Image (cartoon, rainbow, N blue to C red; front, side, top):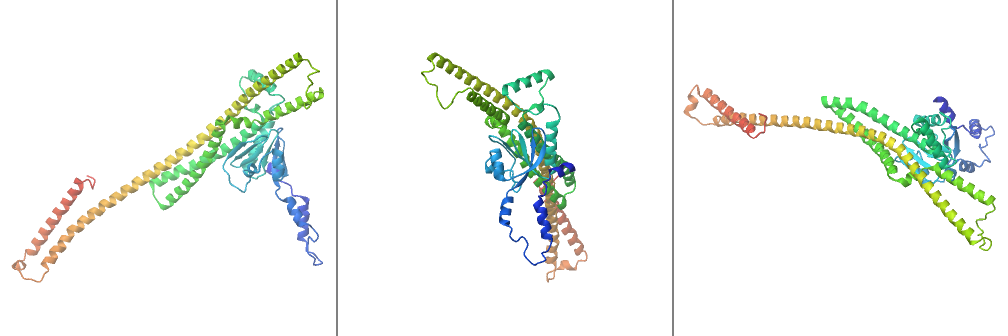
Length: 437
């Protein structure tokens, strides 16, 4: 991986090295450095250059530096599609099929896939380097795996013969753009699934600890965990929706079959060249005097039959290509859907834990309310003693004060009345189901 990283790093230009050497040396004559240099032109020439990793159909990779407008002309893409690949902006996952390219923005994988090459933004991210290594391995793992169409019907027949010999079709015999797209989908799905697995490993012990001990620290950790879960679920849901949207639209899937369109264009160009070599002029119509009516009628019928046959053949090949791409997308749709199910199950577990904690807190709150109710009742009973004390503390003389056992009887009668009143309150609370029986 380190060797690949050093090989894919863009080399420093010699002008920059010389420029750094001249800036480190102080001018002895006191003159200003870079005098007479057109720095504005230098800045203008270096503006917009971006480093790309180019991987061709043979698995060879090298770094190129291309500006934005050259890339637009090279891949026939509008500026808004290239803006999706800008690392300075955060865009949701997107897969766009264009006339000559497929724009892929899946997590760390931001690339442009054509029928002949893959242009990947040069990044030191490990997943980007793994994408390059995996794509090279799949392109160079066997002889004849690179799908170079010379004619759609010929290649279809050779694939069917190969399938008949070995029993089952191999996914390595997909067109180049589909294989590059498959590696991008696999990398994105693997990355999201690994993040979901890490989140699961961290979440379940933390939630179990929270149910056993409710504390501010554990609640804060669960809050951060839930924020990460929501963000990851949104990213996985976006990738799933993008794949599902492609599977539902046959036109978009047919637009992504770049090798078929390229082979058709080359076939049309070869037919035009063949006609021009035979001396048939497209601009000059055939004179009705030089050709008899029967030959013109026969030529017209043959051309109509040929065009009908070509349209039928192209529709059959388009249907087969859509089926190939649909099977490819369906496999990774199942994978990303399983990752989404994991995150959904984790979210449901967090919701169940929150419900359990709320039930526990409600139970504690109810116990506090019951204790407060008993304490209020006891305070009311004790207040009866205060009322009796206040009555007997008034400054008036009665014969009851002269009895030596009067104080004892007052305490006994007041205590018995207080106990009776307290038991009556408790029975009333249980009768009204304000307290557990």
